[in-house]
Image (tube, rainbow, N blue to C red; front, side, top):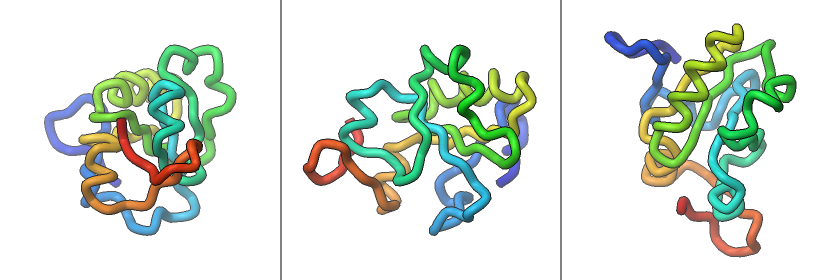
Length: 117
């Protein structure tokens, strides 16, 4: 995954994310708990944006981290901050809405089919 020209925050489109995800890639979901419960990437780490500073030690630093939210705004903020902390973070442009639209697999914590809310 590479940074798109003209952007300060490293960003990747869903078409640039391998399917299935490579084993060395971590996914960080910075959405709120209710959003997470409805649908998320299986195996993703859930740290709401408001808790990221306090929970930085949970974010992997030994591999690239794909940061996601609903549409890409919160994850762009998280990616910029994580980059400043020395984490190799990349923002998913379009977030989980693009993930879902591309037919990528998701799981739900609600016992219902996963969806992005």
